[in-house]
Image (cartoon, helix red, strand yellow):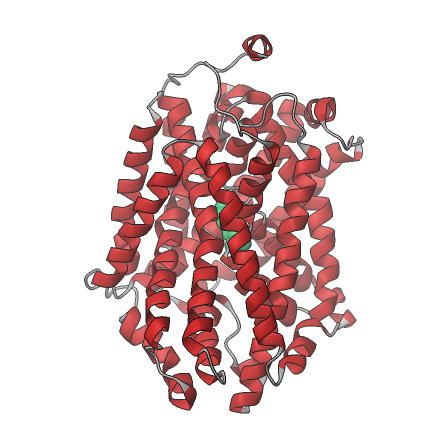
Length: 506
Ligand code: PFF
């Protein structure tokens, strides 16, 4: 059977770049840079990109192309006993889409709120943005044990998002590639407009000083290195099964190595640029409200849904317009990561394993994701979103990523992968690649998960949640691992595409 193919190299590149660029480029990267040494943070970040991120991406693309299969098929190809390792990240990807879609739903909700500046203009709006988000939009409960019912408007937007995703993915990568051209270009245009707006506001320069002034002493601090590595792992959307699938749709004769470089650099350039839009605006808030930068919530969802709305309220004009642009930008940034995870991470593995038609597999995944996602639309949803995010986007990503490198590097053979890459790629990689995959990347990932994960979340519960709630991190990891072993025992319905049949297709 002929495997589906990207219809052009550019479509593949846009799809891969779009999957990497997401909300994290706008809120996570600038904040981490500011927190961990300003301009100096860029040094470990670049080192992480070059010694870990790019080889890891070459590995995922290359292995997908080699076996012409998504993640479980790749590990089944290495040896039946490794198939579970291909499924574990599929479960993680599946859990991510259940809540990532909800964040997208909030973004759309805020496009509507921005049209009327529902949280207010001027000082009143600035003062009310926080309570608008937590009390009116999320109607947040007192803790994870108080769930309440799903909130109507969010459920409506969530349903809309899944309908959109259905129409993007049900025809496969032909349409995905074309849509990705738009979902990458539109947020870039919007980011440029937002950066111009930010940089022309009073206080912008001071914000940029916070963002970029290098504190070289920070480089001596292990936490800075761990933060930089974890950001690289997160930002490139690796370790989530999807890139194996995206690689499996690359034709045998096409380039892999150069595409991995282009994808990684484009993603990181976007992060760096987004920092200007964000920190010029943070500088403006500091000046407009006469507060120090530490009091501007610059991290995570707080930045996107509280601090930025504060800034919008204080802007001298066109408030609603800027609000709409910003939240549309978030929506477009996230949507291609969402369909990447849904299609490459979950739907494609299911099709490969069970021989289901694309439409059937898509409908099953979308309906279950929507239903599970309802949990995050309840009053207690934000807490669960945070806990599940920590579980899959931190532990799941790093653990499965490290194990995948070890099995591919030592069992399949990094040298064999390198030969496969070099057969068709513009840039030839040397023997150094083998050691990066076999030792450096897994060691880096394990360093992050041990130092920044286990060492923190085992002695004290994650983020101060009650013990029982933060134990869900371990429960979810154990259950998804168990299910992965279970799936390994199920017979694969669709035979592997052999090298021979691939060649005769040409
Ligand atoms: N790379 C995305 C971002 O930076 O926002 C986040 C992400 C998406 C991580 C998809 C993992 C993933 F599979």
